[in-house]
Amino acid sequence: MKTRLLIISAFLLSAMTNAAQDMKKDYLGKVLDNLEKIESATYTEIMEAWEPGDTIASYRTPFIVNEYNNPIDTIIGASYVCFTPSIEFYGGYDGKKRAIVYDEDKNIVLDDFTVRKLPFRLVTPPFFSFTKNVIKYALETNDKITMELDDMAECYHFKLTIKEDKQVEFFGKAYYMDNPYAFDPTSVYELWIRKSDDLPYKYRREQCHSISAVTCVDVEYNRLSIEDFNLSDYFPKDFEVRMYGQKRNVPVLPELTGIKAPDWTLNDIKEKTVSLSDIKSKVVLLEFTGIGCGPCMVSIPFLNKLKDDFGEDKLEVVAIETWKRNAHSRQNYVDKHNITYMFLSATDAVIKDYRTGGAAPVFFILDEHRTIRKVINGYNKEVTDKEILDAITGLLE
Image 1: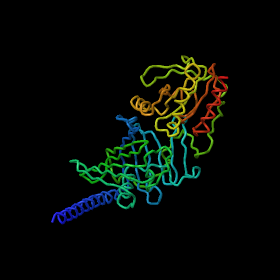
Image 2 (image 1 turned 45 degrees about the vertical axis):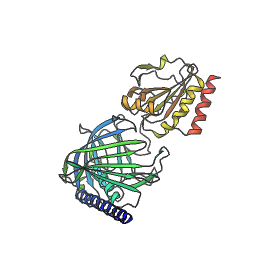
Image 3 (image 1 turned 60 degrees about the horizontal axis):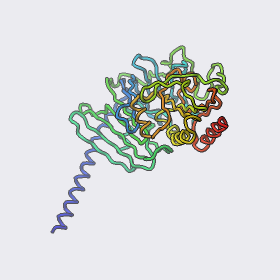
Image 4 (image 1 turned 135 degrees about the vertical axis):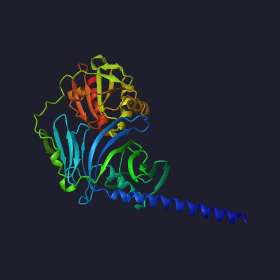
């Protein structure tokens, strides 16, 4: 009798679980139908990002977006144009090429995806296209996933956890990413869906190396037509337009190697000022880094070891964070990765003086007179480690 009751209980539990899953799928199907009715949308989106372990967003940036459904584009499936709150053109995608704006240089770079041979187009779809792709994947995939749908009074919270061997990113459809910096391939996508219209108004993406979220407000639907959309109409008239990979039409700057390193005064993670001229070690290794940069993160153990092996009288290791993360994010990054060397916050001036353009990592090795003796772009563990070590020991001999 007891065995029979256990069997009946297990059967009922399984039936209830299956019924709950069917209800989730039915509701998500309804949301998907609503998303597929959106031919265009104009809205303000608030973009936020965190490093794992952060409790405060490292940045929070608003943009105004015109989004278009674009069925002719079978890769992304949408086009968009993006503006700053002051209605300055920030970028866009027309189904064939992506426009990237560099305000400081008054440049617009067009990427038609023929230079970098990737299996996807490096375009994050606009809000409604992105959420549509996430839901469609959840309903159709055979991947190992779990789905949760929770009632939160005025909205539903949908959580999709993808437990595959590779991280999953959405560039239109889902792509499986080989990420050498991922120690956990789990991908989590969350949507907040209003009950009033059964449409998403926020999504959050979480992976082991980064977290981001977008909130969509002040939406107007189906007021625009893709037939009237021409990306180049939004280009500022005084900006140079060039294709990705094409050299800029500007004078070639002289190499920094062999010149005296520009001095700087920057804040550390405790908001205390540090100047290059105050550093007394015989050799200085500067790393222009970025929180969220995978190769930069991989270089940390090597830089810690350099500092320990040589001592501060011979070598000072200094990282300059150029991606403008806030103080909380910088402190969290230093603590999480046990960084023992100096970690400073960049200014626009130091990025300009050292001509990195915000690229990371870039290493500068300075001698006792603070002349730049070597510049190394990028980080390839064994190769770069040896190159840096040889340069430092050569200056100390």
